[in-house]
Image (cartoon, rainbow, N blue to C red):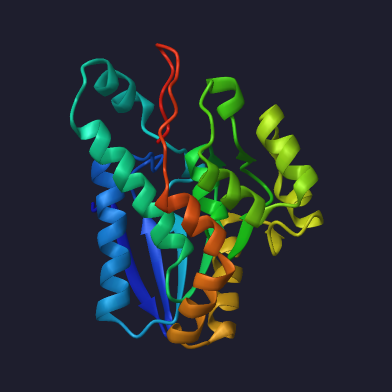
Length: 238
């Protein structure tokens, strides 16, 4: 099975992440970027829905089982990975069509940041949290990551999310308008996300241009990434 697959449903591209917990490593990020390129260049889709094939996990962030040993042995792929991960966040944030995340399971750490890169979110209420555990992992956010979280969440919830590592339920996120709807099951989450994406039906050109203006501050942070100097044993999240 491919790490990432997609299909068309009328004017909607539905992308499925198939890599188990969908943790970020070089292969997964490259496959995700390729799928996004193919959807943009080979279809006339004007909206994108992203879901997970896993029953419990939407995206669990960085593949630390690979990354930590790779950093220890000074694997040159580590630098490539950080650059590629940055490209994933940028690509989704500025994707020239509406993007809808169907959070059919947990979105943790980098996966939660990825969720914040989408324009609209739907989330299942019966299982799954959105959580930024970086405060417990001793991993600082880069400025553009903080900006993406602030884009998706109200300020007081950003403070709570980043400084406490709280696990947010769909019900709470719906209450504060972080997600559009808390859905009773994974199937309903995808159904609602696809139906909403179909209802938008806007042109790629204008959506893409509006995103450039709306997210101009995020673009500046992404253009000036500085990797933090961390103590030995911590994972640098470029």
